Amino acid sequence: MPIHLPIVSPWESESPKRPIETVRSFAGKRAKGKICHGDAIEFLRSLKRETADIIFLDPPFNLGKVYDEAAKRLDKKREKDYVRWMEDVLDECIRVLRPGGALYLYHVPRRALLFGAYLMEHLAFQHWIAVSMKNGFVRGRRLYPAHYALLFFTKGTPRRLRRPKVKPALCRHCKKQIKDYGGYAGIIARNKGVNLTDFWEDLAPVRHAKFKTRAANELPGLMTRRIIEISGIKDGVFVDPFAGSGSAIINAVNGHMRFVGCDIVSKNCSLIVDRIVTEVKQNRGTR
Image (cartoon, rainbow, N blue to C red; front, side, top):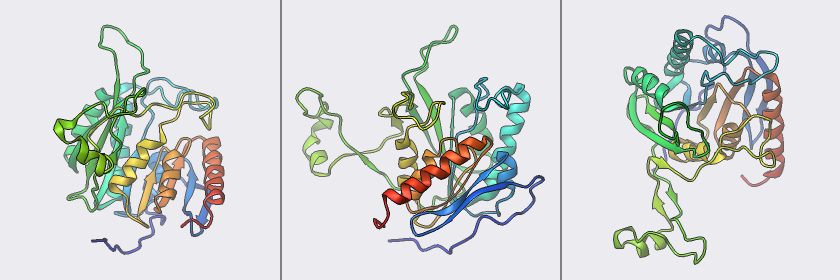
């Protein structure tokens, strides 16, 4: 049964200390929302309380990566400063999230343990999704790192929680199903897939220049497409404070959600706007 929600506007300032620059607003049939340039915490502070249906967080991991030549130390905070900064981000997300809304946090497992425990004090834990990333390198005396964590929390009982289906694995030579699924292979074939689990092994970071929209690596678009499949609500509000190349925003557009995105790197904001414009042109008349 469809859930009908009151339409709420998230972009009315509450208490930002510094103004957030609006790079572009969209109010068409295909795209409704805006892209902002500025600090993630100040951006979140500019949003009204309990207006977001989904918040997606892919923050800097504090691993020393250079996201902007003009600010090379963005990802080089002292450990205690980084933890405090992330807790401030999470506090604002908790404030902005609607009852029943979903928060997804993508991070390395060590930090996911820390921030997951923090979120457990305020939100309802749903899943630790292991996202397979097999292109990492062994660091020090450790096992080969092969996954990142995607934490899924909700504010109380989830308003929307679907179980998408994925195609069963096929042999690349004979094209037949690799597993028999306990004798249920025929049922799976008729139902056109198996239920999605909390282990996503079919994703890979976008590293090849042929497929990237910027110099830095990008998250696979399938990740946020699944997030919207699981928790998305038509005309609901999707919030992304670390929008990067904008893949999550594009999936929000295609998922018929309103969006509010922000990035501290101005050229990323321009890239996202261009991607939205292109997406709208390519899909004009399909909604």
